[in-house]
Image (cartoon, rainbow, N blue to C red; front, top):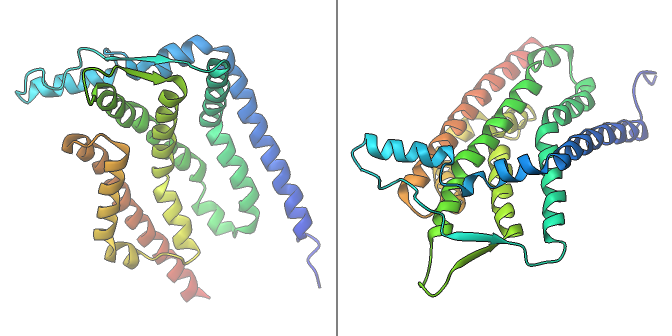
Length: 271
């Protein structure tokens, strides 16, 4: 006999539709607020890594002096300009940057809507064990966003802004290219920092095991180093700075996988 509380496939689709609608509305509302705060979004946040007094550059300068390297890591200028070469370039940048800001700010609510959609399919014990899912997922995402903004973006901008093939060439970066670099660095870092959450669910459904993660640690190291080489300037210091948090995340993911796997084994034994 069919359970009256059991939802049909179409009911699930309808439920998912409303979760998506509410998530999009939250992004739209926060994007509208970001759109109205153009000066702060662009002058302070977007163009922050272009300024020589950006906190990251000051930190590296202080570290350089602390380790007896003088001012070798101090930034004295940013020898490039940012320009818009299309009619609607600045408006498009304003619009899409506002949407990006809206998504980042609304991320905890989007995760909340996702959790509301999947939680009815979990057992009571599983819902209790994953009670901190929203907080942890949001925290990891924001840590990743800050890492991408304060570490990856300034390292990339500083290297690419100072790189030249000839003194005859002056760097004039297009607005969309500059924002694209910042957007990719921030969002990629935010998603990468969700690795422990992703591993938790993959372990939960039996796709990965802690043994598999531990056995393939050396391949993960190669992937992390390759990823660091792609998203950072080609110097060893920048790659180490980016690689260390990623390796820590991988080790944390192994621990989470072990914890989840042991709980699954206990549940199977109690059946």
